[in-house]
Length: 205
Image 1 (cartoon, helix red, strand yellow):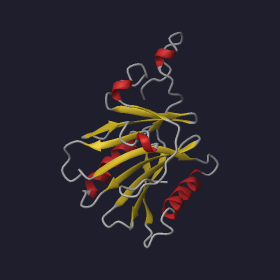
Image 2 (cartoon, rainbow, N blue to C red):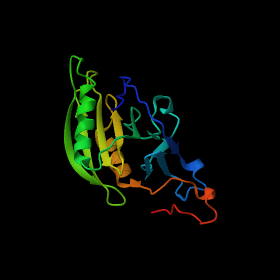
Image 3 (cartoon, rainbow, N blue to C red):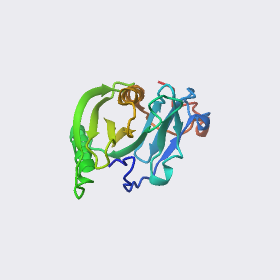
Image 4 (tube, helix red, strand yellow):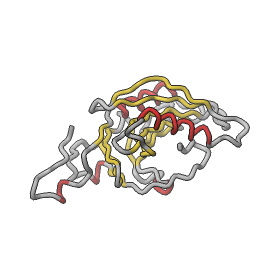
Protein backbone atom coordinates (compact mmCIF):
# COMPACT_ATOMS: atom_id res chain seq x y z
CA UNK A 1 0.00 0.00 0.00
CA UNK A 2 1.02 3.62 -0.37
CA UNK A 3 0.82 6.40 2.16
CA UNK A 4 -0.73 9.43 0.50
CA UNK A 5 0.25 12.94 1.52
CA UNK A 6 -2.84 13.53 3.63
CA UNK A 7 -4.16 10.04 4.41
CA UNK A 8 -2.36 7.89 6.97
CA UNK A 9 -2.05 4.20 6.08
CA UNK A 10 -0.43 1.75 8.48
CA UNK A 11 2.98 0.65 7.22
CA UNK A 12 4.60 -2.19 9.14
CA UNK A 13 8.13 -3.04 7.99
CA UNK A 14 11.28 -4.45 9.55
CA UNK A 15 14.06 -3.01 7.41
CA UNK A 16 17.12 -0.81 7.44
CA UNK A 17 18.23 2.11 5.32
CA UNK A 18 21.58 3.76 4.90
CA UNK A 19 22.32 7.23 3.62
CA UNK A 20 25.59 8.78 2.52
CA UNK A 21 27.19 9.37 5.91
CA UNK A 22 26.65 5.72 6.94
CA UNK A 23 28.18 4.08 3.87
CA UNK A 24 31.90 4.47 4.54
CA UNK A 25 32.47 0.72 4.75
CA UNK A 26 29.61 -0.52 2.59
CA UNK A 27 31.32 -0.73 -0.78
CA UNK A 28 29.35 2.29 -2.00
CA UNK A 29 31.55 5.30 -2.65
CA UNK A 30 29.06 7.74 -4.17
CA UNK A 31 28.01 10.28 -1.48
CA UNK A 32 24.54 10.51 -3.07
CA UNK A 33 23.92 6.77 -3.12
CA UNK A 34 22.06 4.78 -0.51
CA UNK A 35 20.47 1.39 -0.05
CA UNK A 36 17.58 -0.33 1.70
CA UNK A 37 17.89 -3.79 3.18
CA UNK A 38 16.02 -6.37 5.21
CA UNK A 39 15.92 -10.13 5.67
CA UNK A 40 14.73 -10.73 2.09
CA UNK A 41 15.80 -7.65 0.13
CA UNK A 42 18.77 -5.41 -0.61
CA UNK A 43 18.67 -2.72 -3.27
CA UNK A 44 20.56 0.49 -3.97
CA UNK A 45 19.88 3.79 -5.71
CA UNK A 46 21.25 7.28 -6.27
CA UNK A 47 19.33 10.39 -5.22
CA UNK A 48 18.08 12.51 -8.14
CA UNK A 49 20.00 15.70 -8.83
CA UNK A 50 18.79 18.42 -6.49
CA UNK A 51 17.26 15.97 -4.00
CA UNK A 52 18.55 14.76 -0.65
CA UNK A 53 18.10 11.42 1.12
CA UNK A 54 16.58 11.17 4.60
CA UNK A 55 16.20 7.84 6.40
CA UNK A 56 14.39 9.40 9.37
CA UNK A 57 11.58 11.47 7.80
CA UNK A 58 9.06 8.60 7.63
CA UNK A 59 10.89 6.03 9.74
CA UNK A 60 8.13 6.07 12.38
CA UNK A 61 5.75 4.83 9.70
CA UNK A 62 8.02 2.05 8.48
CA UNK A 63 9.40 3.85 5.44
CA UNK A 64 13.17 3.24 5.23
CA UNK A 65 14.18 6.05 2.86
CA UNK A 66 12.66 9.36 1.77
CA UNK A 67 13.93 11.77 -0.90
CA UNK A 68 13.26 15.48 -0.46
CA UNK A 69 13.77 18.30 -2.99
CA UNK A 70 16.36 20.94 -2.16
CA UNK A 71 15.53 24.43 -3.43
CA UNK A 72 13.56 23.04 -6.35
CA UNK A 73 11.00 25.57 -7.63
CA UNK A 74 7.56 23.99 -7.87
CA UNK A 75 8.48 20.92 -5.82
CA UNK A 76 8.28 22.18 -2.25
CA UNK A 77 5.06 20.18 -1.92
CA UNK A 78 6.51 16.92 -3.24
CA UNK A 79 8.53 13.98 -1.97
CA UNK A 80 9.61 10.50 -3.01
CA UNK A 81 9.96 7.49 -0.79
CA UNK A 82 10.93 3.87 -1.32
CA UNK A 83 10.03 0.63 0.41
CA UNK A 84 9.64 -3.05 -0.46
CA UNK A 85 6.32 -4.86 -0.66
CA UNK A 86 5.15 -8.40 -1.29
CA UNK A 87 6.80 -9.96 -4.32
CA UNK A 88 6.09 -13.03 -6.44
CA UNK A 89 9.06 -14.44 -8.34
CA UNK A 90 6.80 -16.71 -10.39
CA UNK A 91 4.50 -13.86 -11.43
CA UNK A 92 6.27 -10.47 -11.15
CA UNK A 93 3.70 -8.57 -13.23
CA UNK A 94 0.94 -10.11 -11.14
CA UNK A 95 2.65 -8.78 -8.00
CA UNK A 96 2.52 -5.27 -9.47
CA UNK A 97 -1.15 -5.59 -10.38
CA UNK A 98 -2.01 -6.81 -6.89
CA UNK A 99 -0.16 -3.85 -5.36
CA UNK A 100 -2.08 -1.45 -7.60
CA UNK A 101 -5.39 -3.11 -6.69
CA UNK A 102 -4.52 -3.03 -2.98
CA UNK A 103 -3.72 0.68 -3.13
CA UNK A 104 -7.07 1.50 -4.74
CA UNK A 105 -8.87 -0.81 -2.30
CA UNK A 106 -7.67 1.38 0.58
CA UNK A 107 -10.30 3.88 -0.52
CA UNK A 108 -13.21 1.47 -0.99
CA UNK A 109 -15.21 3.28 1.70
CA UNK A 110 -14.37 6.76 0.48
CA UNK A 111 -16.75 8.85 -1.58
CA UNK A 112 -14.20 8.89 -4.39
CA UNK A 113 -11.72 6.19 -5.35
CA UNK A 114 -8.46 6.90 -7.17
CA UNK A 115 -7.72 5.41 -10.56
CA UNK A 116 -4.39 3.98 -11.73
CA UNK A 117 -2.95 3.89 -15.25
CA UNK A 118 0.28 2.28 -16.40
CA UNK A 119 2.26 4.97 -18.20
CA UNK A 120 5.49 3.28 -19.23
CA UNK A 121 8.01 0.49 -18.83
CA UNK A 122 11.25 1.55 -17.14
CA UNK A 123 14.71 0.03 -16.78
CA UNK A 124 17.01 0.13 -13.76
CA UNK A 125 20.78 0.44 -13.64
CA UNK A 126 21.39 -3.31 -13.95
CA UNK A 127 18.72 -3.86 -16.59
CA UNK A 128 15.94 -4.57 -14.08
CA UNK A 129 12.54 -4.14 -15.70
CA UNK A 130 9.95 -2.03 -13.92
CA UNK A 131 6.68 -0.22 -14.56
CA UNK A 132 5.60 3.39 -14.04
CA UNK A 133 2.03 3.87 -12.76
CA UNK A 134 0.10 7.10 -12.26
CA UNK A 135 -2.57 7.44 -9.55
CA UNK A 136 -5.09 10.27 -9.72
CA UNK A 137 -8.50 11.02 -8.25
CA UNK A 138 -7.72 10.75 -4.56
CA UNK A 139 -10.48 12.07 -2.26
CA UNK A 140 -8.33 15.10 -1.43
CA UNK A 141 -8.31 17.43 -4.49
CA UNK A 142 -4.96 18.12 -6.12
CA UNK A 143 -3.17 15.06 -4.72
CA UNK A 144 -1.61 12.51 -7.06
CA UNK A 145 1.10 9.86 -7.05
CA UNK A 146 3.43 8.28 -9.57
CA UNK A 147 5.00 4.95 -8.67
CA UNK A 148 7.77 2.88 -10.23
CA UNK A 149 7.56 -0.81 -9.33
CA UNK A 150 10.54 -3.15 -9.67
CA UNK A 151 9.92 -6.87 -9.08
CA UNK A 152 12.88 -8.02 -6.98
CA UNK A 153 14.16 -11.48 -6.19
CA UNK A 154 11.80 -11.89 -3.26
CA UNK A 155 10.06 -8.53 -2.90
CA UNK A 156 8.35 -5.87 -4.97
CA UNK A 157 10.52 -2.77 -4.56
CA UNK A 158 8.94 0.54 -5.37
CA UNK A 159 9.51 4.29 -5.46
CA UNK A 160 6.54 6.57 -4.78
CA UNK A 161 6.42 10.19 -5.94
CA UNK A 162 3.82 12.14 -3.96
CA UNK A 163 2.68 15.41 -5.49
CA UNK A 164 0.76 17.89 -3.40
CA UNK A 165 -1.49 20.59 -4.74
CA UNK A 166 0.17 22.72 -7.45
CA UNK A 167 3.39 20.67 -7.41
CA UNK A 168 5.30 20.56 -10.70
CA UNK A 169 4.30 17.19 -12.15
CA UNK A 170 6.81 17.28 -15.00
CA UNK A 171 9.78 18.04 -12.75
CA UNK A 172 8.64 15.49 -10.18
CA UNK A 173 8.24 12.77 -12.78
CA UNK A 174 11.70 13.52 -14.20
CA UNK A 175 13.22 13.11 -10.71
CA UNK A 176 11.35 9.84 -10.17
CA UNK A 177 12.56 8.39 -13.47
CA UNK A 178 16.13 9.52 -12.75
CA UNK A 179 15.94 7.72 -9.41
CA UNK A 180 14.44 4.60 -11.00
CA UNK A 181 17.23 4.49 -13.59
CA UNK A 182 19.76 4.23 -10.75
CA UNK A 183 18.03 1.27 -9.06
CA UNK A 184 19.76 -2.10 -8.75
CA UNK A 185 19.59 -5.10 -6.47
CA UNK A 186 22.68 -6.08 -4.46
CA UNK A 187 23.63 -9.65 -3.57
CA UNK A 188 23.94 -8.62 0.06
CA UNK A 189 24.16 -5.52 2.21
CA UNK A 190 26.78 -6.72 4.65
CA UNK A 191 29.29 -3.90 5.19
CA UNK A 192 32.74 -4.69 3.86
CA UNK A 193 34.26 -3.96 7.27
CA UNK A 194 32.49 -7.06 8.59
CA UNK A 195 34.37 -9.33 6.21
CA UNK A 196 38.01 -8.12 6.15
CA UNK A 197 39.32 -11.60 5.51
CA UNK A 198 37.79 -11.68 2.02
CA UNK A 199 37.83 -8.03 1.10
CA UNK A 200 34.85 -6.03 -0.11
CA UNK A 201 32.09 -8.20 -1.50
CA UNK A 202 29.83 -5.31 -2.46
CA UNK A 203 31.58 -3.49 -5.30
CA UNK A 204 29.96 -0.45 -6.81
CA UNK A 205 28.16 -1.21 -10.06
